[in-house]
Image (cartoon, rainbow, N blue to C red; front, side):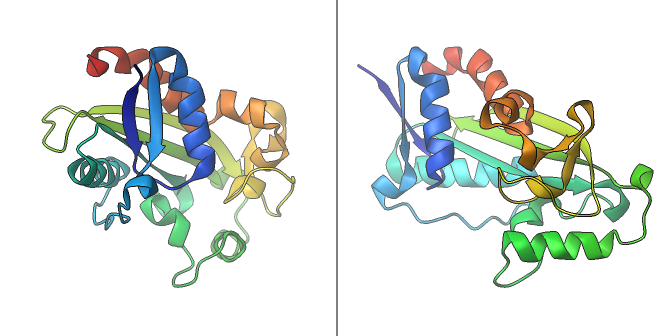
Length: 200
């Protein structure tokens, strides 16, 4: 019998990815929407805090173990912004396009060596809402912000995120390449290695 885990997200791409990665551990990952779980208020001041808030909220309502992630872009010249506010960087009604335009404006005139940045992903797995020792897995992906968007794949800041070792933006990578290199790919690989004892 498969062990059920609730994903504190309605994102179909994430759901598919977690199901593929955890399938051989006998795990079935279900979206929180299946249980009418509302989105948690992300009141934390770090990726770790927000992921814990989301996982705890989903576990509390469903009674199932919960998995949550929080991720975003940190730009050194902006003291780590947009960080936890990556999705809503350009304010009310934020879109990928508006966020990218604002980021380019803020970095306007800066030379390449001052445009260093990284994507960061934190995954949290909680066995139950009161789990005192949640499993926390992290991944980081170093790069820099280019001066104009390029590439057709990906989403969010991918068209602006330059991957130095491949001389291409994240949006120019195939999904397979991106999953192997990305912050989320790293965090998911760590989760897979670490989660087995938590499933007992």
